[in-house]
Length: 298
Image (cartoon, rainbow, N blue to C red):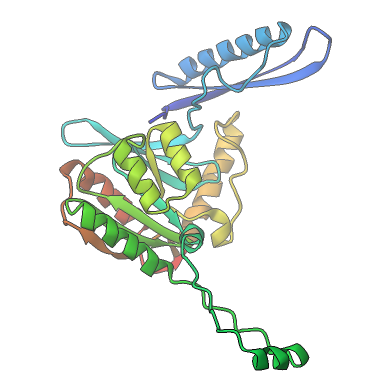
């Protein structure tokens, strides 16, 4: 789980060896202090300038795995003081649960529909019918109703549980699909078991990639702002000035006021053994309290 308590941004206007103008930006995070984050950002900026002067590739970061630049709202611990997860605010302002080992799956209706086979309507050939249709073609057939994605997902769950009866899933309806939480054990996103169930449930591929890259699962806890008639935050995080920070607070007040009329998830049911791993209970309670309801989904 690549999250930091403090973030800083450093910028520099400079030239390369050929005199071309560049505006360089570097971000860095730290769990020590804002000053430590700033120091690391300055060092990254100097390294990028050196690569630029040496005709090297700039690149965003020196490693391929980029920490999410999100404001840390709170960390979540168990009764022994061990970190279970964290809540952050993403780039468009929604609160997000980050859970390193509580497996959460994001399944889109679109992906489930693509997986459904359509049986062709085969009619035996008839020469008389052929002649009638040649001179008097029939109207086009009525469009088929959209396939039931809930039924499709239930079939996938039943097939998985037939082979793995010890598993347990909590199922939620979202605006454009479903959310599944695995409760009977903790799993790393890059584990073979996680990869297998990702594929079996037709999990969104972009979500899977993000989980693997960040070494944690994610679940949005509050609505997307445009779904509740609101705009994105006025400034990207981290904020450069106190004025930007104040404008963000004002944005959050309006956002949370509008959010009260909406839910992120609706409860569907529990499937499997019914077992809930003790370390999962805290995060499941936080998740359900934050986003479960019977209001319009956003």
